[in-house]
Image (tube, rainbow over all chains, first blue to last red; front, side, top):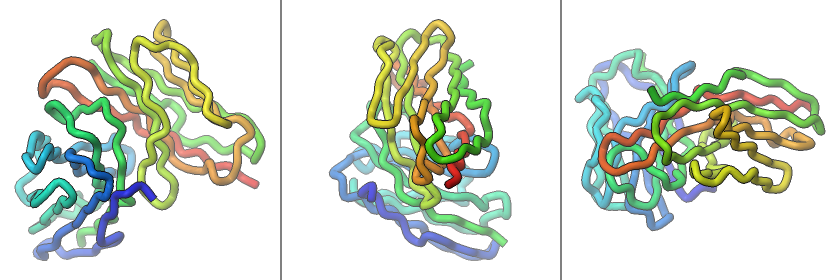
Length: 118
Length: 117
């Protein structure tokens, strides 16, 4: 139990659907992250939030829309996805970073949402 | 360019064997951090260790040990007397020092370790 909870664990959606991924952390952290994990690729950082403010958008297509209403919750809204967006989406949290997507703090990850786009 | 290489894609051992997972990194910075994370089948990555570039002492934590060699830019991870519960994908990562938005956290592709009974 890492203190970071992601729902749903699995999601199958069509290319025209709209869905949202949810992440909640109970660690008192102020930085939250979305990562994409695809086979045979390094972990890809998508977004970083520090104290609810987005501090990194790693050239992510607009069909992915993050939302951070408070330091404990992070959402990833999905719409008109493509089959190549199928992947494991991981949420993480840490103590605040001073900028950018790099952090020297240890990351605490959720179990991820396995997304399949048909 | 910054890079993390985990040359071993998959390793399979029998329980109680020792196993070493290799990690080689490239960076131009003198200040950086190295990490190892474990990803069990449940999916979440679990932090194992963080080491800064100025601390070359090897570290041991139970059955786990890490060998940091700046001369060869390597940060290898050894599991002694492996157990089935060690079966997971292990990731090495590099975070460079310095301020601002140009810092990056670079991940290796991971090594999948299977420990068989």
